[in-house]
Image (tube, rainbow, N blue to C red; front, side, top):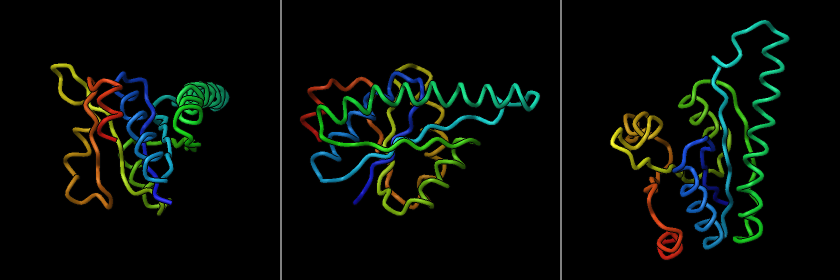
Length: 151
């Protein structure tokens, strides 16, 4: 089964990427893998403190994921999987793609502000020509109705 890989973060545009991936998966018989990456600099403390912070970060991610997962299950009939990795964002995305051969498309939401589409899209665009799978960029200001129409 082909999976759509979506990056879970705190950005507003993440919502449209999740919606797009779930709708496409539902319409094509695919799946959704939701990847959340914990940056390594969050744990540069004593070992005990770092372990507590790591556990708290994972708990926040799981709660955030469940909001999206419930919507995907209830509205789209898609049961997403959550993957949590620690490290540098681009490195971990590429590692996940390599480790899971069912991932067929990366789906990212683009920011709508004047600062550009967002740091992750900017990073990935530099290596877009060598990515092993297609990259889909979903405009952050697309309405839910428009997303439904194009998926």
